[in-house]
Length: 237
Image 1 (cartoon, one colour):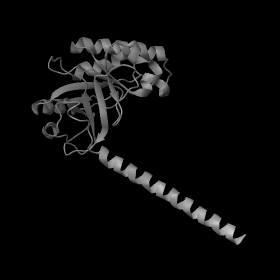
Image 2 (cartoon, one colour):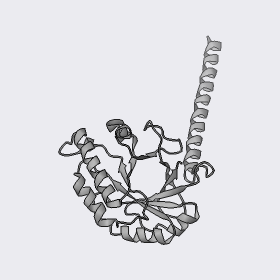
Image 3 (tube, helix red, strand yellow):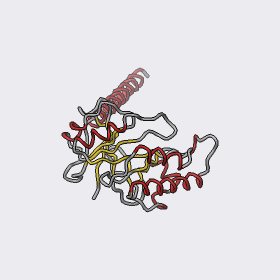
Image 4 (tube, rainbow, N blue to C red):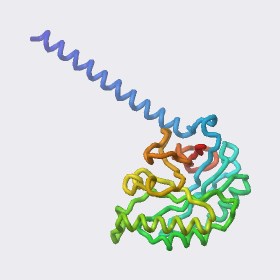
């Protein structure tokens, strides 16, 4: 009996050690991945055109430095129509252009608001300029939290109205910056014939079911260009 108990205790200690080792390996890998993702970007040989997204309200972005670390373009996000104004947008646009970057604008889509309210902010803040890159509409929020409730059909109708209004102002087709949750709910990639901008850290995105033009490959890249993390984007040709 004592020998059997001793053998069982030894086996238990080995199981505990193996479990502890597995935990340590997992923690170590997670720490390495977190550190690696701070500076990771896709291979330039595969994606020679690379750039960044500058968030609405971001201050202190060094656009010259952004260009020096490899960005060829910058997309500037507008503040949401239902949020506070962003008086720093005009300055960011001017500084990005002065740094020699190609510049585009991202309009966030709010499924709870009418298209007219959203397009009016875009047309008020963004100049008509043929040198701007094609505008993008960010589709990352669903209507789940809207009060009053908004049907999926109404969301899809307002989105197409917003697409048409922004395209009329910009004189170029929009790019749809399509999040996986929005795509799963609305199937926008299949129903709307526009270039796609997909998002997935490190791994090539495939949730749209068709080819994409832009890929947000690292949503939290750390660099000397900004105190805040930068969303790093590449172009697929």
